[in-house]
Image (tube, rainbow, N blue to C red):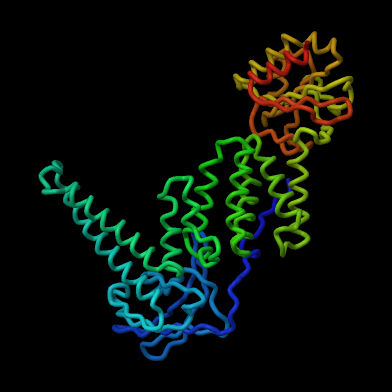
Length: 446
């Protein structure tokens, strides 16, 4: 299978439009000359925005003619051992920071950026609460009987209450700015599943450059991944509709979903991928795709669509497991073809095979051909041995090296799976699992 990975960053469009550059001035005390870098967050990683800032004595200046894209940025000192985070958005591109290099967070004073001043106030409050909780946890760790610690549970409850109160108040008091949006997104996954998306400001593309935005997307996928493909499609449309509030967020979300479902193998997920490709990429609602990328998406889409009901089935060239001869599976179709994919040691496959054996004569009398393909990846000799033990009355086939690409064209991600193909080569039915296969075979035999 030709693989592709749709670059998310290549699709990100900075939607904020302003012409002035940026200037971030940091005045350190207890400073020794060192490289000071500026990095931004993107998913779980950080990427350098400035590798080394100009310095004059103990003053360091990050400066550029073009504005920085919004997000959470880290000022990194002392070879990654010491750093502190700041918030950047369109209103916070020019401000001054003063701090001691020994403890930037505690000593930080900011002029020219109210949102960052509040950000550091919040961080200091959280640090104090974390220190207090660590103190109590340490007492518990070394005191086997926690009941001997006066008010242990009460103290922890008070700390949690103080944390929640500070979080709520900071979000409420900073509505409309980066601090509120960042904290709301950070804590989105702590809310009930059906309300999490309401805590993400999808109109703010600065959230893309935080460690939190993509976690909300992942959590949304995880909540629905075990549901049927049609519910997954509905949930995809829901989150994409919210992401349309911002072009960059829209491109990111659609691309993230497409990449995820390209490589997540589960029955029905191929249909999810096909719908995403058709509705958002091949329909050209996602702009700025290179023709090469669009073609790769279409190729993958066509492969996954080949196994959907109503599609023209691919005529596989495979090997007769018993005789070793090559054959095309469509060579002897009369009225219909039952194409079964199975694996050795699969109890569900055994039951499905027994059902087909039971109704086999009735199927033959109705001009229905049966062919099976073993999905095992062992040597031909071992596959032949397994097939001989099965004693199938129909032709069993194999393709050890997957030269026919049957796993892709028939989306064989689990076994047993049964396809019903008409005499013109179109898939008219697909079913998985022993019970449903038995029902299908019984119906066709009548």
